[in-house]
Length: 416
Image (cartoon, rainbow, N blue to C red):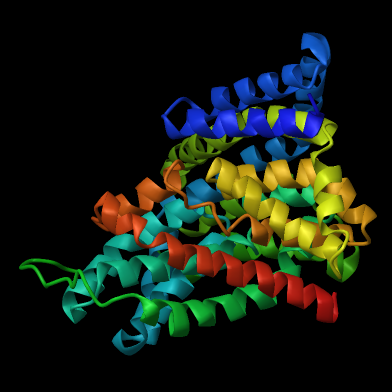
């Protein structure tokens, strides 16, 4: 059997298994084995390609685990909540959707997982929605849209893995998507949110309060992320390389100190490690199928399909990210498979490493919210939506991802 078709069958098998609630890690591994065997490689060669795929992403996995210190600090010290509260109070009730989207964008851009950012801000969104008689679905799209905008400029696993696989500096990949992220935020707030039908209006409940008295100060909450950004900015500014594996945990430690939560240090680190461990384990499974796809002729098929179009090589990056995010319902896994499998072909088509990683990363936001992933259920549950209500939001989320992906492509074409 042709290796491209075999790898595709293996990927489809993984998707089916994930949909029926088989562990995503084992689903991906089984799909990789199936794809290799159907391609006629034999068990030994198939396993070798799978291991090769895992080896390719090992450096990124180490950096992702190191990032857990910053994530744990932001969530467990209350720093993330303080930042969100401050933004919402500063912008006021008139711009509540902008405030919520901007809060989600900033938290995710600082290194908080997008689902954790949404869950962190959701209680504030619910209180605001009850006071102002707003729609739950509109509130959730504002949060998700802002989170997606922040995710393409963040030191989160999806950005780390894309930059690592393309061999591009992480700060440069983050900077490349700043314009698409800002434009995307404005489109989310002023075009996409108003498109959603005004249903599921919330009502104020007795005793509902917005209490932030026990949270750390804003400057203390921002200190850790600012230190992290400053350390990583040394490379483009001063040609001093501080690896994210150092910058991210240092920022987390600084945040623990400035917020005064010394006794929570172990709790912060344990929480961050728990969150990152789940991603790291998922990436092992993702690496196996990425290795099989990379060794197959799928990339050649995609190159041939796009060769007749102007800028076909450019569009290969976001398209591969979107396809793989749909397959795994995860921006991290989607960016991993796409960058590992198609990175060389994308650069061979003339796209630079930085912009290839940036476009794969934004493309991975297009369909990472499908129902066979955890993000779909976690975000719907936190706002009290039924499955049917949550399903109706998929077209709007997809539109957000499409805007971000096209924004990166257009930015690359005009100024890249």
